[in-house]
Length: 122
Image 1 (cartoon, rainbow, N blue to C red):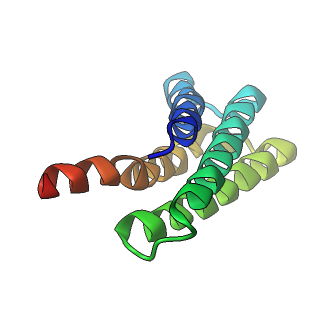
Image 2 (image 1 turned 135 degrees about the horizontal axis):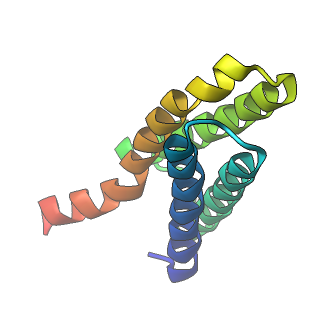
């Protein structure tokens, strides 16, 4: 495993978790939460790109497919957050955390799957 890619992907976990859980605990979506969603997305995409270089491309297994789905969901999540904030839709701002937490949980699947598979094999 590439240590730089692992570090960057772990930074994505930190950024994304700060954005998602601070939004959840504050009870409403704020612009700075979107900033952390975007930082998480950038770090995850960057780290994934480095990992692709390290392993020779996309793997079509649980990790690879769930990772691709997670990046797409993170992008949709950030885009939707931008739209909600831009429209200043008060109801959507208060309820946005439901989608955020769902995307965060889905994102954890590719983050932790290599560890679970390594434990199962080893």
